[in-house]
Image 1 (tube, one colour):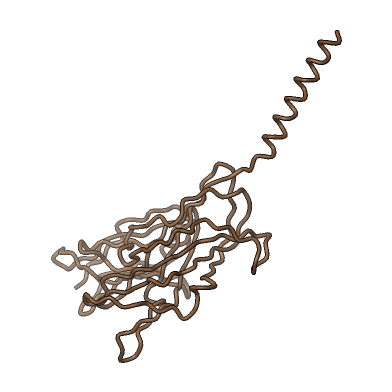
Image 2: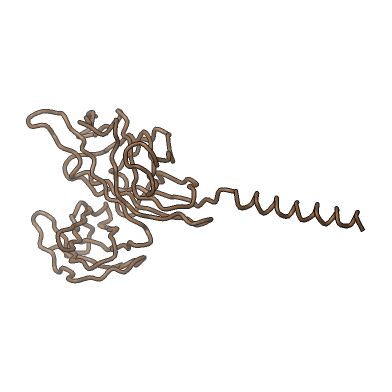
Length: 264
């Protein structure tokens, strides 16, 4: 009887230890950040942005020194100008502890360049390479789930040319959003003879917010927008669009296609 009691106690202790071990295990989910670009007008061929590191801020941490978790220390150079009309680059694909997060911080390196008419120029960062660019975004990581974020680099607003000089400054402007709360709008821009029109500007406007892209060589465009109501229009110098689309409702995860324009 005594032997049986000792055996039962041993089994019970083993079960308790196993449960404690499982409860102590850190639960994680996956954070994926995909980057793309709002296009830059002019004779610009490449915009190489040097991202030195990426960190995420826990919502319960201090904004200054604590609560920041590094998710990438790999110096990454991305040609953002190639990331338009549905093309994306995977910036982050990392496990992250379950919890609530409130900010992303991008620290820029010193190797960002812009290529104009075949010539490469340094993109000077007045500040940001030390303290980083902080972006507010509230999201939660759940156990064994994937949280996908979009990082949209606005090249037009970020890059400034010095007057009468071949020098450029970089004051990075990004837009960050949850993929699950966004949708896409796409279509083609053509001439009246149905031939494709490249580099046509296509706008989605909602109140004071606007998103812009340029058509590719096939006249195709795609806009990534947060769920909402938008007016969609197209413009090309020397042409007038046959239509515009008013009060277009985009629901989360919608893919609205065939919003086409004929330029006359």
